[in-house]
Image 1: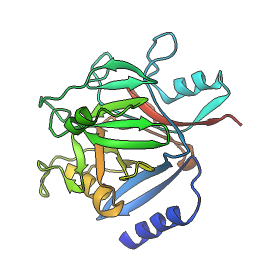
Image 2: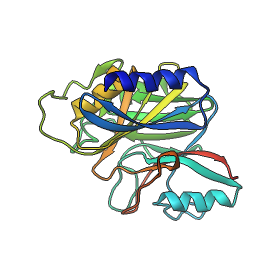
Image 3: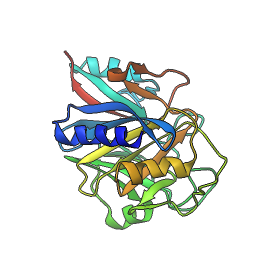
Length: 245
């Protein structure tokens, strides 16, 4: 199974990427769906509300909004934790406008399991940055979403992850390469521990930094794989925008 996963990754590296490439991969007895995005060329954005301030909440609502601009989604995923009213729990920046400030302190739940981090989109690159490093560097993000915990921090798993944990959920998150050119969005196809999920990013994908988006309510829009997950309305979402055809 590991060999098959490595062959898939080799194929991604050996051929030019479309807006994104999605595939199902097996690793250490668990199934994952991954969508790899070339952040140097893809139009990667975060979405929360429409132009009138109304919550989007669903992938279809994003597509409806984009259709008015002659655009469409080619991939999307929920992208950060939110309150009952779907407002972001942590830092959220959309097209340069700050919706919620950075939350730097430990707190309850997975978000507060520090170190947590920020997913930052700039022109031609995407980065997962640990929260305090983000505050120190103050990168000029165009879009950003804070979530937690970090899955991988500078090549190491989060220090609170346990190899023998019994806490298992369907989980989703994102990892980025050191040069910001590669963003890989991953959702488990079954229930996995944080340790197993983080290990996928570190050991198979070789990504130095990765961030947990959410669990249990994880959703994916990946037409390449026939995926268009529905359910309760979501808060922040991330997606690749392409020209409508």
